[in-house]
Image 1: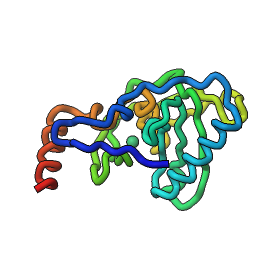
Image 2: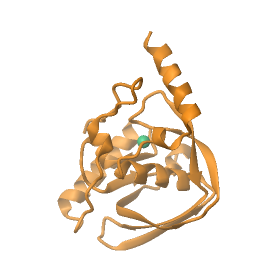
Image 3: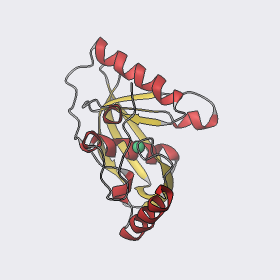
Image 4: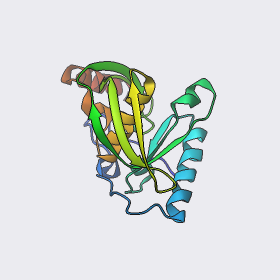
Length: 172
Ligand SMILES: [Zn+2]
């Protein structure tokens, strides 16, 4: 498994695979279960708390998350076909990083509350709900990936300008 990262920050050009809208899964097969487990292992090996399939070049609507890993425990969630059932209107900004945008930290506006439906490894439907914690922003970050959206797209224009300056400085 190999991580896809953005190559040219300056022009905000991102690898096409990070822009794919992923395809929903009809049925969770053994093969897909293996992919999910590989993604989880890969995510942990990178010290990350979320990974979407298109970040490793797969056009599958699948992401794995584990915000608890930040606190040294493992409570992995594998989500096939995640979709919003509802989200609150209140927003907040949270500091985020992204494996595909190395060395970059951004304050990203997110909904405080989300409720999401997904299919689990056992082909059963689950609902995950979060208010006001890291989990909510991780879920939104990963669903965005699956829709070809990067955290970069969510920040206001002023921040994007700063972001480009930073990167230009780094390249010198
Ligand atoms: Zn990301």
